[in-house]
Image 1 (cartoon, rainbow, N blue to C red):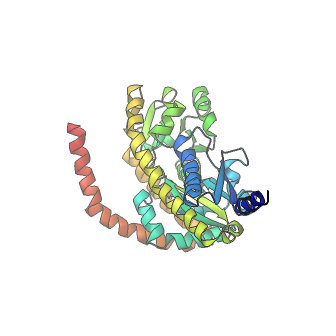
Image 2 (image 1 turned 45 degrees about the vertical axis):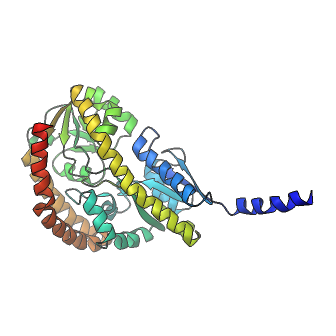
Image 3 (image 1 turned 90 degrees about the horizontal axis):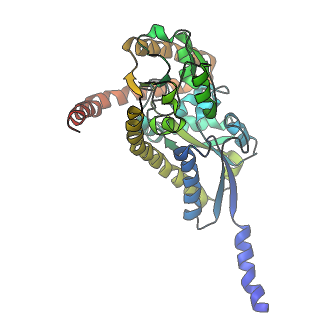
Length: 351
């Protein structure tokens, strides 16, 4: 019996050494790519740590609603959350640089800015003011421009239109005469069906198809100019992070980096399939008219000036971010856009 006690002691000690975190996600379980990515991140952490680091993921609303995730991490209610920073713009407009700006960087450019352009350092300073540490852990890529009950032929058709849209996009559209509304995913379909709203943006073909929005608002517009990069962020409380051993910090960082690739890859693979289904079921896909795009771009530039005047954080980040974007556009215009434009035309004709 003495031998049993000797064997059991290390197992008990090992169990006591396991780090256990709770992650509050901003997504319902029905968002299989978004919520699934949070679960994959947690599983990868467990796998790489040999079971020493376990993260339990909770869907939106189970611990706190999505807009309260930043507060929950900051006050220690949970160790971390999986979120889109746009949910928290009411606290600080500069958080938009983390998710993506209207007419801003695309997904590749966003990563370049974070990793090589000084973006991560600037965002770390910003999130430090909330007592949190940020990690990029995904991206949807450019989103669609949403579903409309009527055709949009010019910028004038936006005036008086009630649209489910939040964040920077809603701030810009309000300048064009639209009335932005923030509505939970489950309420979008009935709101469109009853005419309570005239339009709604969600994410893109894969997620939009699951909501069935094409059945009540058939006009599907591109592009989602307000989110050229909808980057997903994992926020960790400062104390939880500093208490984590260095090797587990490295494991968590690696797992987040993997999901930055995996989420975007899943959306790029799933969206074309869903888009074909939407078109087959009656969705009328089109592009926003040029005068609307031009008016929205001009309104966005005016908004950046105003936000710089009211937010020291926005004023500190914007000049560096803008300079980086101008450099990226120079390169992408010469090589990436030229090749994409030609290939898209040729493959579209023969494929």
